[in-house]
Length: 348
Image (tube, rainbow, N blue to C red):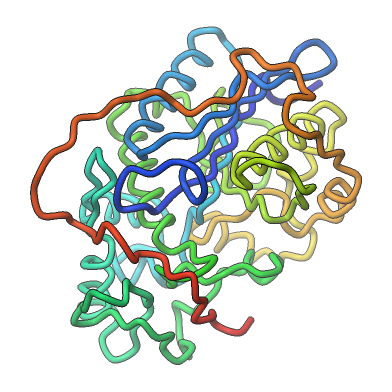
């Protein structure tokens, strides 16, 4: 029997202003229909605020209708072991999430203080051995370099255990330049932490694997999990890559759920020691499916459909959400945040 009735896949964004199209926030919702599945919608959101309104509606609908929902987010749910204790005094993922949410400012129009915060944390928590790096070239921050610092020699290190098994994964400490995920991680954790504390839905949501362990049975109807869409190869299509990516992953996970493979991917990765499992559950988190042979096989045999070849309810569209624009000094630069040149990441 499938584990979920609906699957929501989210390609997050670290943008500092409203943006649509390439390198913006896309999300796709698939629903189970009998023995198959269909796409409910595949939409582009100009701001994180706009998407969070939709997330609240999707979670609320699933709970109200007694349905089970998997939400996969394309940003890291944790930092390398030792980070939470360094920043909060406790090796606990939730303490770190709340620390980030308390200090990140992320306005409805995407303006945010992530570079200022990273600079301040480098000075106060990582003095002499900075972790965060990467910034817009036209802006200067006292303790945030545009160059990669030497790889850390003590905890927290550059990579989490799960990232060692994900080809091409960048360090969560890297905030800018091609392929970076650090900005998305700070801003994504902030939004999910606030959602759990403020939406009223926390009693219905479990964060995998922190609150569930490596398991495929859940006490709560909604599960949040970290995903890595780059594991899936996309066919050449005349559409935005992010748009194709969220649909491909939503379709793939829906099929995996139908044939039982998703349950395996949620289970304990076979190569992890008991100590590594404990660290993953307490602090680092894990990427759904990483370390399982079934995922590699599943990705290799995943059919990829061109746009328009699947049944849609409402089709693919850009979310028509108008937001008021406030006029004051931006919290984050509006341009030049992501250079097209890649300064590289820590060697893995």
